[in-house]
Length: 381
Image (cartoon, rainbow, N blue to C red; front, side, top):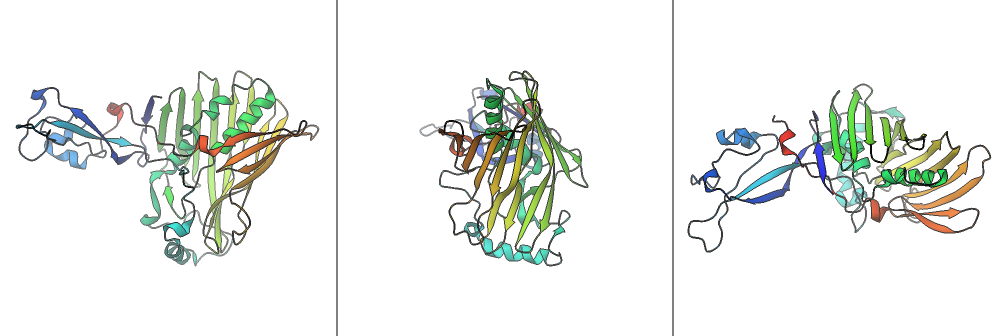
């Protein structure tokens, strides 16, 4: 699959990945010469400032490095350029989630956070709380929203339009809804976007644009289109974090709206809340009841994200349960159960047959950020 990524005016969406180094054989001996300092002195292909040494401070840090071939007397130049890449998406590793704060020395971090929160009463809105830099992740909140759409092991969004019946399409939308739930690192927060900041990524037929449309309160909008699959999607989110003593819970005010243009159907769904627990069992969890509704078909779904028990001693965490039903009659068509970071099964109430609706291993395990395909569009700082 080919990828094209563009960040527009975003300050935080694009970061250098030191591992993304591409060696390129220097086929033209006149391209540059060795001046003895270990660098090719030809004009940098992607950053004009390298020639003057200013390239070391270029926002995306393109470099050309000399390399010698074994057994060659004069040596052969190999150009290497560091490619600016998006930071990796939130994902599950094959050995499990990285949500447990105890794995990252969480006790010391918790003490620091509790010191910051000591002036707040339980129930207080802490939106304006300023976190120290060590708590920030090298990505913008815009990217976090965007990668939930364009970083997935399967094209679950495109499959929403492929369903033959209204029930098929509702189940596909519920599956896509589950796939947007990603692991949240413990006590690590993305940068708050500045007003007007944008993040744009195109992956194949899918185009995603995120923009910070309000600063106070912070509101993010997302617009995605797929002209081939004839669908468009609009999100707007306003996170409202509140302190409750032993944990912080961020409610996500807003709505997600998916339009299947060929079927003339609009699906509206909500987001679960993010809970950050300090004690007795430190970690993060998605909690709360979410809904998926389609006015045109009269079908609705409820998906409940269940919190872990107080001491985490009853079964696994990240459980979900729910149902798909007809709004007019209340008739339940399907029941769903499982874990959003594992397998979610679907039980047909009419036949009793159970099948797999969603498998996180196919969707969010070992996924990677899109590569920047067109380097010429990247602005210099």
